[in-house]
Length: 123
Image 1: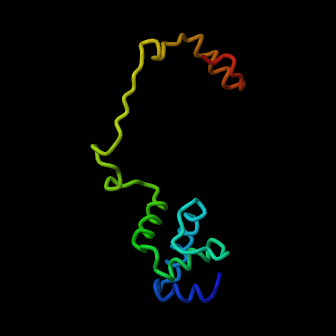
Image 2: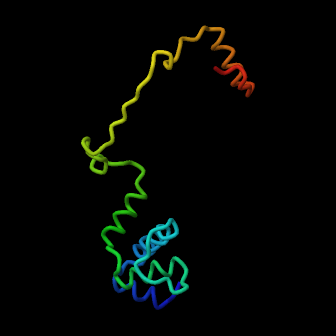
Image 3: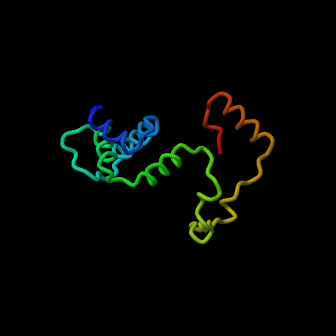
């Protein structure tokens, strides 16, 4: 990475570990198609991310929140959409679409077919 760019970023984000996390998150989002806030000037994506941080064209709070959300494995209740915001799915089904009861012989055939990797006995 460009030394001058990193030195400029350290003035804004003094913790180098935080800087690496935020710059890499921004770099990945640029690679995924996020719009640039500065001109690319034939620079690679990590350098563009560092230049955006150094020029303070990004909201660091939003960038940090996006990083934390992307690293979360459990979604907290506060992050879930409210009930009125959540889309309501209406599922229509007929009686013929519902699964029918299987006989013991049919169940054994299906299990044997699964064990033998034979999909011809599936329903």
